Image (cartoon, rainbow, N blue to C red; front, side, top):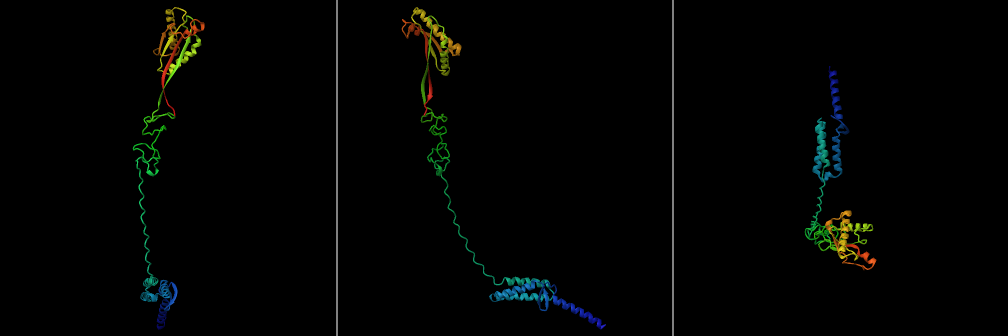
Length: 310
């Protein structure tokens, strides 16, 4: 019986010894106080204290160094009492204290450089109020309200040399001379055409050789609608004065009728007058003279307005 009890006691003693040798939760081989394995936090705390001593922290701040060292030793004691979690917490605290010993004073922060505010840029000025600032305005004294181009100069849209704000004729064609108001300078010009048709003796019939000539006369009348014509009939002195007066009238009316019927000339613009033999242009004593006097004539005129060019 006694032999059996002795064996049981031996097993219990062996287990306790083994537990004492390897620790409650051994994780790192670090023989100390008869125990081969400790949680790694405890040896790490010891190493932190050792490094602090090597760095001279035990002399620089002895009280704080002693506190960290004592806490490390206390962690070992608590671990040997099988209070593993408490011991690990103490070891971590001891490591932190050992690593934080004698902190170097933080350098005084350098003062931030003083940034001087930039001077405000001057506001652009538009003295003449034309919408173009003075630094870009090539015509700085433009009258108020005058339209200007991108250079601040008054516009001259039709290029006649008179600014738009002064131009009373703003659409003058290119090349036309203008006055100070920008309006074309009118020039009155007289235009005319001579009508001349000669007749055979004692005849009011228009010969065909005059067709082209009369067409030119009609074109002139169409081109100048304000023009009118007094068609004058004449004769030589072969017959009596009274007869020649009537013959000259028939000749004038023959030409007038030709223009109306063939070229649609407005009758209101034409007038036929016979002068008989009273206005000869040549000598009736010779054949050639008499031929020249048997005639119908008219000077057709019109006044047109043209514009002076540059």
